[in-house]
Structure formats: C-alpha cells, structure tokens
Length: 57
Image (cartoon, rainbow, N blue to C red; front, side, top):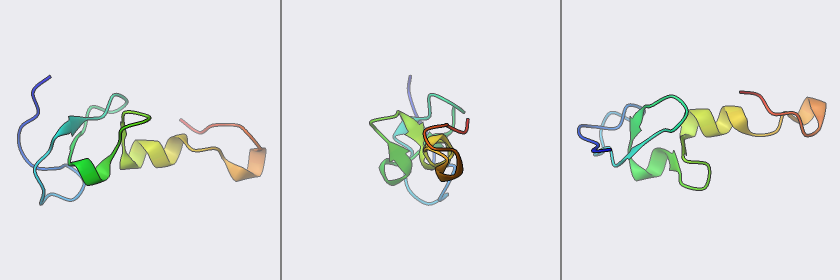
C-alpha cells in the first residue's frame, strides 16, 4: 500500500508506514516494525501488568 502525507500521530514527519490494526499512516518513529502497529496500537497491545500475560486490544 502506498503511504502519502504526514504522520497522523506527530503531524510533522512524512508518513512511511500504515498500522495494520487501525490503518493510521505514521512516520518511522511512530511505527513498531515488529508488531506492524503504530505507536498507539503497540502501546495498547502490550501486556497488562495487572493481569499477567493478558493483552489489551
């Protein structure tokens, strides 16, 4: 998929990636290449420390 425009998180850098969860176009600094999520979705998908290995999505 072609990505054009600015990052939807920082609104200043060129968007280079699309989040596979929410579809946001983000710059390389706001993209988790391992998870293929934007920084917001990657943060939400991390283990919830209160419940051990349960993930929040």
